[in-house]
Image (tube, rainbow, N blue to C red):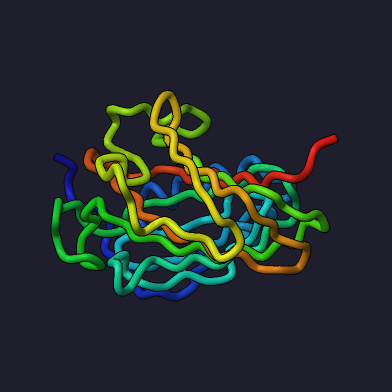
Length: 214
């Protein structure tokens, strides 16, 4: 069981996240960045019991709202500037409590909606999401983090631009949307459920737009 996390805050944009861990992260970014310019690059948005950051680069979050229920999902709006994978950093900002009230606790049930603007200049013919508990390391079947792996016939996975999807749970937790297209300067909407039965303070959602090959 994890101890309660930092106090939550409203669904508004803030320049720097609260809490000791966040301050340590910001300090590290400042040390590594030439001329200490990184402070202007860190963007964190809060919604529900979580914060969402584009700190790893390659894309820009433009909004966040919701609490994570089916009726009021966590909604993240983004702009992707290339057709290469980018990683969304997600942190808990409120205490962990299994089956606790959404928005007041990080309860391990996160209904998501992600609206992605294709600002890459290339058409996307597939779009894949991958969950990671540790950055750049596959999230294995038994770690509790997945795209609702306990549900064999999910009815909550949908995209505005892709007709079909595939889920893989071993050795990765991946959700691939296929049979569709997202043209440049168009927005695609993705809906799905993320579950985390052994919650961590921080986890990651890799987003990988696919372009035609050959």
